[in-house]
Amino acid sequence: DAGVIQSPRHEVTEMGQEVTLRCKPISGHDYLFWYRQTMMRGLELLIYFNNNVPIDDSGMPEDRFSAKMPNASFSTLKIQPSEPRDSAVYFCASSSTSGGSYEQYFGPGTRLTVT
Amino acid sequence: AQSVSQHNHHVILSEAASLELGCNYSYGGTVNLFWYVQYPGQHLQLLLKYFSGDPLVKGIKGFEAEFIKSKFSFNLRKPSVQWSDTAEYFCAVSLSGGYQKVTFGTGTKLQVIP
Image (tube, rainbow over all chains, first blue to last red; front, top):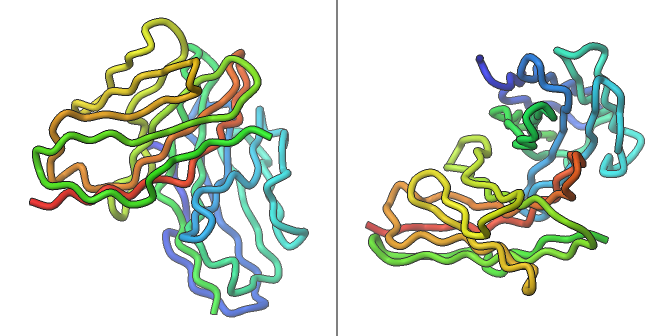
């Protein structure tokens, strides 16, 4: 398996622009998570899905952030409009309830810089 | 609210020194416990996990962790560190029973000096 795939790996954009981050989870995994990592706040859970349905979005910072999972193999995290304080590394992770593992498999991350 | 505390933000050790990284959690029920590692420029990877049974858990690369329920702790240990262990280490907790949401600690950066 290729693991969790994220694109782009790096994104540099200007304040006010829309940013879309993409994630392809591991095939067969039924949970998908979006995290944000910064020096100041560490690793924060933004939202997670189970079987494509958002379960908990309490970590989404504000209405400028939205996430979708239209099918089991694809999810997006959108920021509109972007602000400099959104600069961070955004990780997607997936996991499976089968086998009771609960291990989350992380993607390589998208490093977002908003100028 | 559930929380995970990692006591040390930055640890510097010489090669062959012993390592212990502290982790305490605050949860009201039965928990699953994890340690993840993030090598420089890479994504998080699972080091080890505890669900039930023997509270002393062995992981990859010679790491182990001990779950002490009475202390709400899950400290990570390694008897002799190597330069390649330089990384950031995250303790994480979730409620057991199929609950998937995991809360991560703020991480401990370990620097091993050759």
